[in-house]
Length: 117
Image 1 (cartoon, helix red, strand yellow):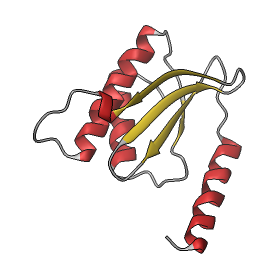
Image 2: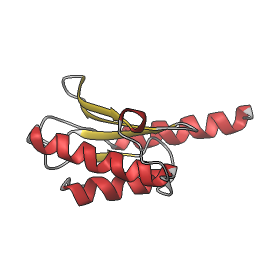
Image 3: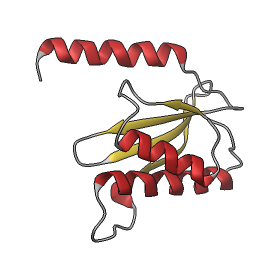
Image 4: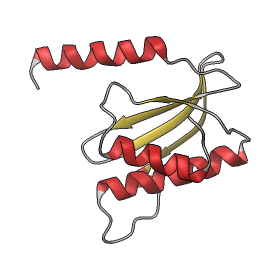
């Protein structure tokens, strides 16, 4: 990746994080996407603690699932754990990425599971 692309990505990430803050009433759902996997955390920024953290590599894989389908399953699993922790509303932090592909699939899965954002 070129240095200018890395700088643009970091600026986008900082811009999104400056506007998105999570608290105990409405924690932040942070998404990180690597080339192979998707990671999601529900974070209380005021206390600086991760409440729930999951990765698609930790979930049971179906043989014919693509990356977007695994991200949707991750969103559903995350919503289920959030419901057990009595979390209904979150703030979505896409980590400077565009709302497309695996990020969008994870968000749709979380919404189907009952999270509101």
